[in-house]
Length: 76
Image 1: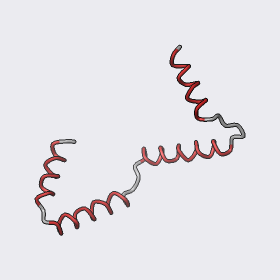
Image 2: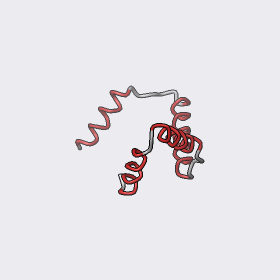
Image 3: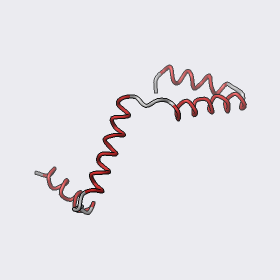
Image 4: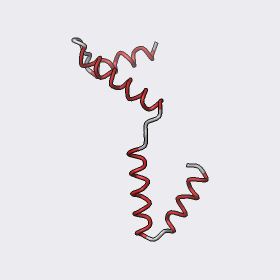
């Protein structure tokens, strides 16, 4: 963590319990409803694309075999 974070955290711990609860609620609401950045949106879009491709594929490889293939490729 950054020094600024550690300082902010130390100050937050000095608050009384009620103030800590109010602050934590505000932080949580802000984090949950904050707009996605372009990078986050691109990541979520890519995940959705890959999941859709997986479900559309008639052929799947068992996870154990896929892992064995990957490890075999790394050994060479």
